[in-house]
Length: 262
Length: 176
Image (cartoon, rainbow over all chains, first blue to last red; front, top):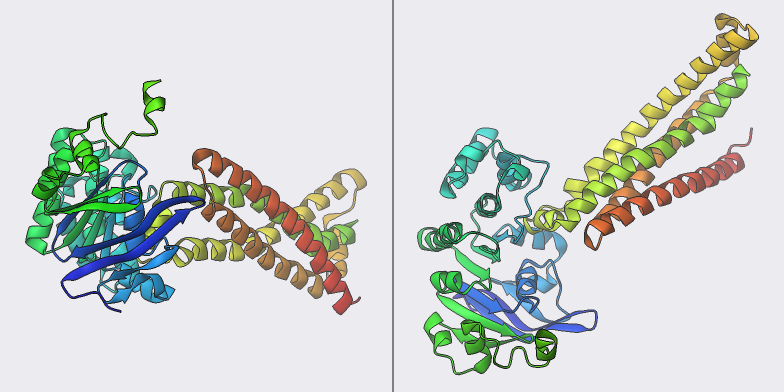
């Protein structure tokens, strides 16, 4: 019951329901190590749910989720918490603790989960903040930062324990094009320099194609297309080509079309 | 009157009034704070880092209330006794020294202990209810509002209810 070594995480025949609504339907997805996998899909299609399943914050109704050799869905709580230290997550709205400064936010995992001294922690925090270009804002509160700055601090916090897998929930949503490129390049340089695997959930096409080494398209609870970015670009699947072109004509709006044209 | 005030406050009113006040003030603050953190995904982020929210968010708050309650109810007791002393002096011309003699005669160690013990338990109850309501908030800002109201109401009702039960048990097992 272990995932093959070249895969860092795997979802196996996962079904996830929220009340009556089936969000993921018998979905299987393998994440290869050192990939930058972009998961595409409409808003509300369950992309973020996949990230939360990998972290073990949500439990699937059926199927299993693996991170390396661990079956996340069956791990006891303590073990799960230990496994989570190898996974970093960057939230859509950053989720920084609003009562702590930037420095304290980034230092939090180190303070709580390691025995390092204050000097060592400061050094690591400085290094991570430097990496995301936020060293000068160390003593600011999250409320004093702009959206892009918060995202970068959130990224620094996710990286502070040197995770093997980083999950990004809409990393560039709501950012200006320049800041979006900065974040994109950060994600790329991370995986190239530190050999981190990343899973990115987004519906910003430009950013998706810039980052991705692999892509997966989620539609109606299933992965309907998966492969290298070029493969998706050339896909014959009408849903994929409609999504990539952003056209209103096609199967995606079927059934909801009356509502949009009325 | 000195005896009545001393006994009523150390045994009953001190912890009860302090409990109600803390439930309204600090209970509401805890629920609102944790609720907002829950809504803005901060709690989830803490969990995702591998830090237990129970240890990191709930335990310190419960502990704080656990130790704060007895301290504050002691302050409440002292304030009540001093206030009634002043009033007795002003309206009934009872001398301070005589008043405190009467208070000392009326006070029993067991009354003080039962009051303090009760305060510790109230602290845990209020903290537990406030944190639970805060962490189970759903539905944005409106959810935080609802949870805060419900936390205060539940905590006050529970404190009064628990106080009654405590007194029944106490009088059954330790009759005077």
